[in-house]
Length: 217
Figure 1: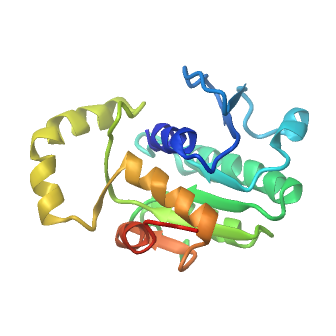
Figure 2: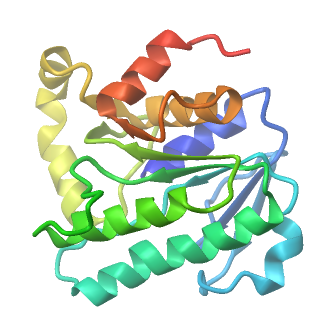
């Protein structure tokens, strides 16, 4: 869902020349800027290295719900897949900005009782050790899908449908803690262009980034 929002903003941004997606399924979009790689194995990038060179930023939006998964299963998707991509990209594009979509409540100590938070924390810490120009962890909380963005997780789709009538009220009550998919995409582009105030951005930090740097150079 976040990836759909980020992709839309990249294609709309006049400063972005080329967008390369790597995913298990096609986006269903056609655009002069867009290149797509569809592959089932997201742990091995050997065959596609030539297509991954020369990029300024990576917006890593892949993720799954931990519901019903063992820690080893969740770690394989959340940690191993992320690091396989990041390690290759840091080697191919040392001047790259890498933005990772984590989540509110992530456990940087890697020692807490909540499984998904530990694994996310382990992933964040490992990414911050890689030799990117900049690595930035986005930790959004509540997210409002807009412009047709839609979660692939059935449970989340039900939650978003049920919450839709009260979202305007929630946005008024908690404006710094609810972000749209459009705002997340715009914030990622701002960080790629102008840098981030710190390496870990919570929802309120992402909101501040949007309001303080609405007109990046």
